[in-house]
Length: 422
Ligand code: SAH
Ligand code: SF4
Image (cartoon, rainbow, N blue to C red; front, side):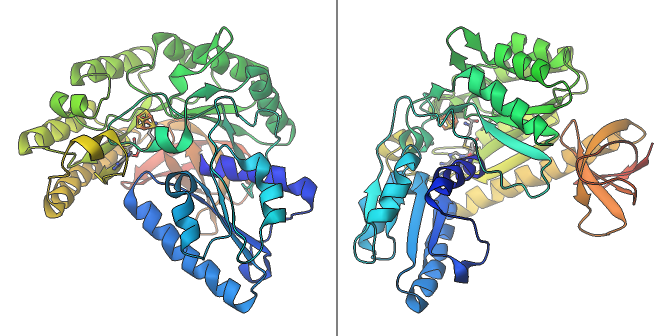
């Protein structure tokens, strides 16, 4: 999401004469787009601010900006350090040219106003993907859920959906510009609603407007994912059979405390529905280990849910208390760090095995893969993702980034399908 937002920022700055450089020592303005979802994401940014200030020391006229969620969460606190000249929240990017114009060393500028209707709908992003293969399209902003651990509703504001006309237009423009894949982005795509168009309707329109374009989306919330969306996925060849369905915990007691509005049984029912419509659909998830008051039994429920679903992939975290959230106000962060770490390691160990088992099940299958470029390990091999989002590598000197290639899976590691051209 921050990549997509940064592409909007480049588009908003371009008419004012700003061009992108990857060489920090050449930059007049250095900005970081930030994430507040866990404390260590923020700690990394504090490290980056120090780095940016080395440039400032050599060239005092350099401006340093913090954009995005951390700007929104910390507001003036960021300015007090004297190390930041611009603080701009996720809904204030249109004001960046003015903020930059007014800023000077010792004269910082801030705009952290959240909006009810800003979607940057008509802004044509300046794409950052160098290959020109895969593009992100933001379809909504903010979030109306109040998961008790989560800072997103506070940093990104209320949920609003972007005009579907502009989404379909942007997808078609990506295709005309040579892109082969788009990923529709939102915190909770299933609650997309613009006039009478819901997410299933949007997905169908995008898939049908550009049949040559591969379509992905993220994130689906288990409480809202509908059979209608699954039917649209199953009936359009260019929509990838992969759903990212964050579960967060396998324990009903934890889910309730997290204010996720589903139960373990509901989650399993949604998984069954996905597999009923699309037996080959990959399912990935997010999980939080060691949320407030989590017991060994709750943790075992998470491990058993992982086994029961057999996720193809997972993003796994231990709970990080975020200031201002409901959990921070109401529940003590009482699982000791060593217990959180151990539980997280246990989840990772289970998932590593499940990923390997999932990959082994693909041996002998054929997939259409979108080439991303040479594999990291071997320049005589290409890599790219299958529809199920798994990374494939195979020996190939003929094709190049952006080609669709048929491969057959010969072997695998936990992270990669090892293939040959089919
Ligand atoms: N909108 C998405 C999630 C966005 S945040 C959804 O509801 O699924 C991405 C992931 O970060 C979450 O799924 C969750 O697993 C993790 N996360 C969010 N807040 C967290 C916290 N306080 N500590 C640890 N992980 C957290
Ligand atoms: Fe955070 Fe929940 Fe919204 Fe996801 S749905 S962004 S976890 S509040």
